[in-house]
Length: 259
Image (cartoon, rainbow, N blue to C red; front, top):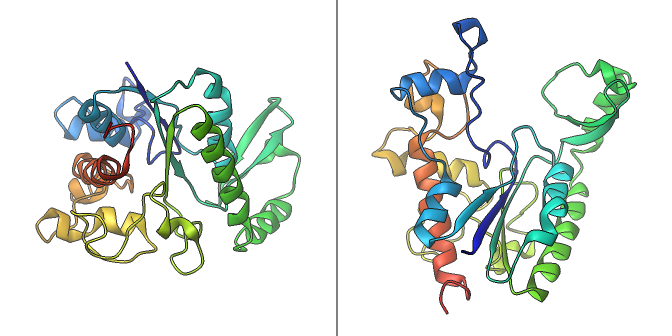
């Protein structure tokens, strides 16, 4: 069976409850599972894989930087076979990696105000790096990785598709992504059959747009639970919309699926 490989951050990764015994040890996914009656819903990669008859190989992990996402691909590139399909969900440009001098591993550094005492860098240094990474030049790095991936997979008979939760990476006015079917983006109305036009630049706005949910925002966990669980990741309804958009795109343009 061919495989659907997915790479990315928490917008692609499986829900990750910690299965705490008592409420103080619950995370938002534990709470969401309780809200859903004891079972977490399927996420978009699983629904999409079932729809196209592929085995899902989800390599995504919450909190990943784009460096980690690229390494997710490097770690499995020798396992990818002809007719497999890859989907990359590139994340916020501000995230970066740094050597963790205490644990001897690479840590993901996120622009969320957290302290990173084990990196051997001052808070000021980290803040300066995060500010520097707001410069649009950083998207060139990700676009170069994408170019490499596309060339690599084409040589082995594989298709790769790319989307992003950071609209700074795919810019509708200055980026080839909107003229290349290997990029899953929000295009003009009619470009992809079922899309609602909101803003070309912003995938996350599109996925949570109230037109998908009968006029009420219900795409995120916090929206679906009426703010009982303050979590901005997609809930069951949001994952269904994302699956529908991605399937609509791939099913129209994929040479592998349309043999």
